[in-house]
Amino acid sequence: MEFANHTLGRAVVLMGLVLIGLGALLGRMINTNKFSLHYFWRNRMMRAYLGASRDPEEREKTRNKFTDFDNQDNLRMFQLKQKPMHMVNVTLNLAGGDKLAWQDRQAESFTMSPLHCGSYWLGYRDSKAYALNRDNEGISLATAVAISGAAASPNMGYMMTSPIVRFIMTLFNIRMGFWLGNPGPDGDATYDLDSPRESVRPIVEEALGRTDDKNPYVYLSDGGHFENFGLYEMILRRCRFIVVSDASTDTGYEYESLALAIRQIRVDFGVPIDMGLMKFGNRPCADHNYCALGVIRYSCVDKPRDSQEPDANYDGVLVYLKPSLIGDEPRDVLNYHASSKTFPEETIADQWFSEPQFESYRELGSHMIATICAAAPASTSGSNASGQTAPESIVEKGAPGIDDRIREVIEALRAQPHPDCGEPAGFAARSIGHVERGDGQRPKK
Image (cartoon, rainbow, N blue to C red):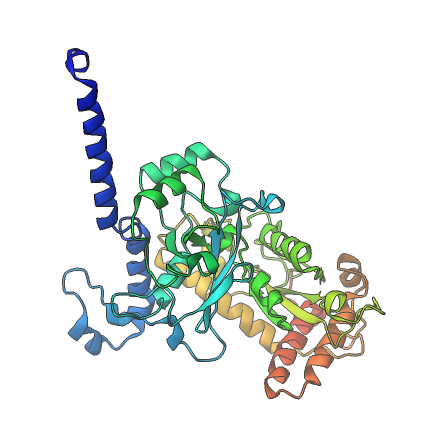
């Protein structure tokens, strides 16, 4: 108190100006992205997957002997030219956005591919020129994947509703998200930067929930903060055959992630998705399935307006994979389930898998796909794989007439002149065969 009473006002003002100037100076010297948890996460992801896939002898020559990290493990997004094309789904946060229709979402979809990075609502930039590093190379695969998995961030789309929690997470630097240049017109001078030029403003916006798509920089985080599957972007691109693997935590099998995706797609694009029979569970049961099928009704939007009838020549098919137990899984998988009753829907908060846990998930996934591929393809005459009429319950529990409509779309895909269309149609037919398999093909209860 004595210090305050005897301190001249001009001295206090001067001290304040010095602190502001020092903060601004340090803000330009500190990299907002590097002084967060992002690189801690990214480097370990890169080592675990990209590094492990390299030749050990070759990697030994270039790795850091202390950390075991190696930038040579990484690839640039524009280098991934193989098929199928890699498309990484992330979330552009809009906690401070002015779009009232999106006030619940607080986010929009954002993608990174070998061709472009950006958003349908903002625009796209060439991946070779977006977020350049010191060597003038475009954004890397490790960075894109790490952003896509940045689950803990002060801004998390619809998942962050508390300003207090947001502020505390920023204060304690629990920040796995990433700041990059805006790919839209507001980022003409910043889209090629891999971090903001100064760190004070981004940190303040992060803490106060003022992130939007109007600033020179945008805040990106886990794709699941908008939509967990990437299905939204595939519908936007009018893909007619889509396979979705639902690895979200869903102990009660309530299909929240699927419902969210279907709802957002219908609201934004006007494309309904009708699902067929969905019967999954984590208690071994012969009536459970490994997949479900649905019709993507592009014809509601793309077909000429003179007809509202479904049209297989416009519509697409969705194969929805979900971890489930039917009772014929390998013995070690069932043994692990006996020790963990929530398997295969354990919480994703567990990031430290044991060897039995990791192997059980890997083997279950392999067994699921092998079982579906081994199923007899469903015919297009309305009969199931066993040659009997499909059980009435399959139609009753799905959308009306869904089985026939799925078959019509599959046949339309087979009729396409493109040589790659036959294989997806065959997988879809086998997926129907798996769902409609006869009693003789089901494990005994």
